[in-house]
Length: 180
Image (cartoon, rainbow, N blue to C red; front, side):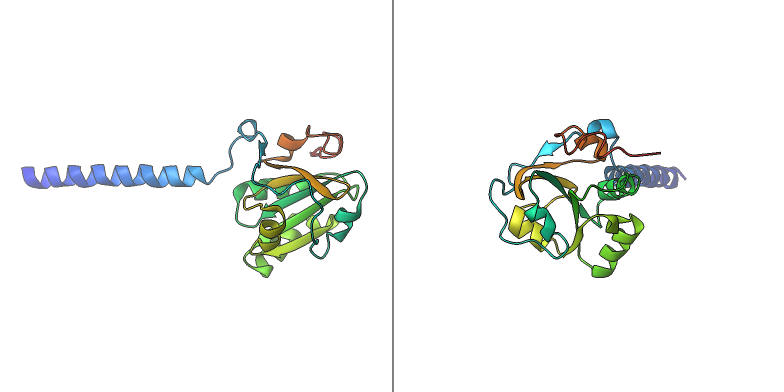
């Protein structure tokens, strides 16, 4: 009887350890509170030079004078879902914000664009993230790339539109203000 009780206690202790490990893994996949999602400069991004080419749907961003913004989102990250939901509530676009949706599947990307109403913006689907990787050396998401006269001059990782609202006049709280 004592051996059976000891074995049961050991099994229960092991089960508790496994449950805590699973809980930690799931918690790490949840988006963090907005206060913890300050923009992080991407030092590895290719900045300061005209891009060799733009994907279909985003060519206009490379031709604009002045400031514009390119948002890189992915169909596989929780923060990108948050940003997509926030973009859906941003008032009509000024034509100076473009979106690249990186995905391993055209169907998943099309669903992401439709679900978040991203067709209101110039956008492109980047299968496998190849364009982002080869042109900007961006391999994470979400990322905001500030363009000046079509040239990338800054790139930051972020977790919500509120985190990038103060980057410059283009990315102001009035431009990216999320409505209720």
